Length: 259
Image 1: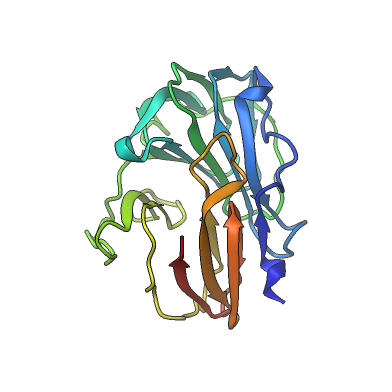
Image 2 (image 1 turned 45 degrees about the horizontal axis):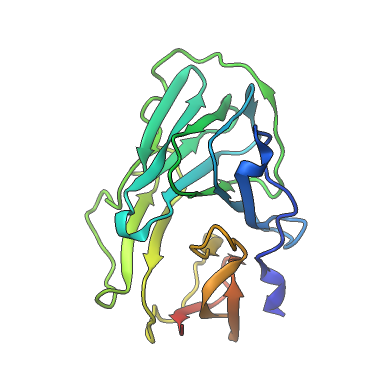
């Protein structure tokens, strides 16, 4: 029954947001309430060329953007520059980053320039099941959202999870302690196989969204590995880029990388 809780690569029929040129975006996988009832919205794509957009958008949900450089050996570098506008602030950066956009804020990726290698782009709507956007105008005073970007994996409490040597590179961490209102989200690279993982567990007061994304922008639907995990007592295997929605109180884990 838990096959209904996730989407595999190929479920993104078209790029999410309008840009020029449109072929600069390579969709990998999307998941929303039309696929899995109750799921929040999440979408993954590769930005494969310089692009520009027109105008600003707003959503009826908080939104989290993740930008990750496509070179695991230089994981802090985007190998390009992102110009991201939130209201009257422009966040211009070239480091692997989270950008948090509160509900109702006018925003957009105004441009990606100087791209040497494709970068991974992930969008999550924190409290909405479907993607909805409308045109918006910036009204907030300049400076209000200039710090709504997070780099590095640096939890406020300093805690770094245990992991087998060489298995992970910790990329990014964000939560409401790091940035008020932001959802707890973390991002890591998997480098090797592993045969251990967190014990099977539940979250009684929150849903969980898990993404497994392949690192080949030429084949964004492919995971280039073999991953399995437990959900509701069932063992699920995937070799495709995959988004998983785990409802609260549903048992899940461990997460194993077989290949």
